[in-house]
Length: 189
Length: 443
Image 1 (cartoon, helix red, strand yellow):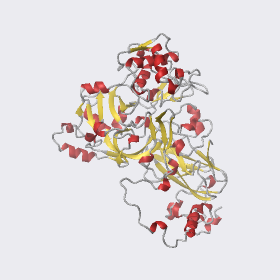
Image 2 (cartoon, helix red, strand yellow; image 1 turned 60 degrees about the horizontal axis):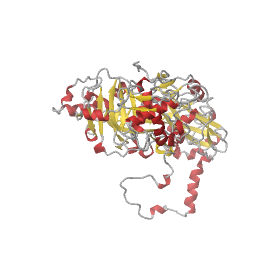
Image 3 (spheres, one colour; image 1 turned 90 degrees about the vertical axis):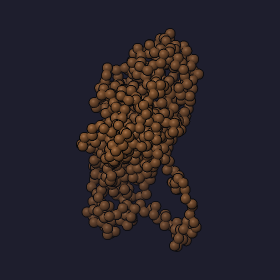
Image 4 (cartoon, one colour; image 1 turned 30 degrees about the horizontal axis):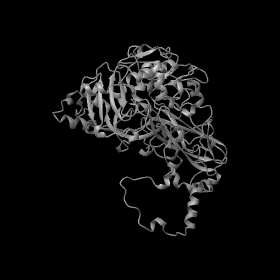
């Protein structure tokens, strides 16, 4: 059921002259509903503080860095209780050990075999991990855990350092494994 | 076969001629006679489905109550500020499957097999949380819209409540619903504990296009990243096209403000699209020209195919149907008349047809679709059936207005393999054994 209040909306709100947003053209076949224009201009500082999006090209990554060795210590203290030592064998998501690859009877969907972008790892850890205290890792700690997880997934060497510069350059094995299904979507790369 | 029933005098043998194998009867049977199933016991004659009514009758006699029931002999309970179900319905609950190490991570299943009609009561709407239900003070909540817009804006809940609203009755289904269907052996769970990560409500709120127009989209904008105010700041990308088509900033669910576990105070509603895109506790919309590639649109909610490729941005939930009664775990009460009923839905539009089989898919007959039949909404179907007491396999098959027909399980598995996890929508088969038990089978 689709109960559109369009006529009501247009009639009521065009009558308030102070709402300058209502002068847009409406066509009879597809009436555009106009709102009362109550959105407040978003302050630049608010946008800056709230915008935590991190894109595959590194846009949004905060400045910082961390090593595999540092990440190993943090992972043991903060993550292993759910994810198991080295990201295998815990109650939560398996994070490494994808020996089987993605085909066959027992495919292994892990960071190393499945995740297309390394930036996603940093983003998800920073915004939501650990579940008991989401967002509590510092930026440098998050780079370190990211580096450690990429290392145990055999993507980075033991002496690797991850930073806002190096992370977007990491080539994930399944980078090109994804097919966009919804009609009309265009891949930008 | 129909001889005994002729003696009841209500139906001619013609009416009771099966329209398909296994004893399926004409879907218009009860409509023709103006009878509902509840009053159809006279029709059943000696049939065994009188069991429940007989038991009730015995009780009345035992209690020696001739004219009044016990609860008629005293004043009833006083008024209540917020009504609750009868204590006799205390077993009709959501079934919780949560992470042992993180109680707010997991799901609760809607008991579809206990419900009727098409509207899910708010307290029984399925849940999927990634890190629990945030307790949000609406006075401190804002919706920020920024990115590729002319005017970045922020909205309070009070402001949004002053906008012109619209209502839409539609389902929300988790992309992972029914995923036990990918298992090599049929899982033995009640229908709702297997397929109940779907629910249907009347959602009311502000069309998203209205506020996006107010912010004025950059013509090059193609994606929007929606983000929640929960403990993982859940985020996901979706195309601008959907935002401008039928997306709603939902404030109300079945007439009351959205329940906390369903996104209070504000939920993004993308009708027909997988649950994870219907972002609860909505706090931020960032307009962009690319998806953000969040964890929940890459590592999760994507489907691994047999060739190792991965389906991404599947979004729409394909047509699906399910017999909710009789269904796994329920019991039959002897041979005789039953109503087969269930739900059908499609994320691509209206359900145009549901067919039912009672002989394992050899023959099919069209079920009655109960009005209203709405786009991207639960549709209730019904089918009269005379069970002969023998082994029977019942199943339903939905078709939507795009012409898409719900596939048999072997067809779906052949196409997608068994490791896609998400978007399982194959035909569901229930086996009824002569003892009256109902099991889940692959057939």
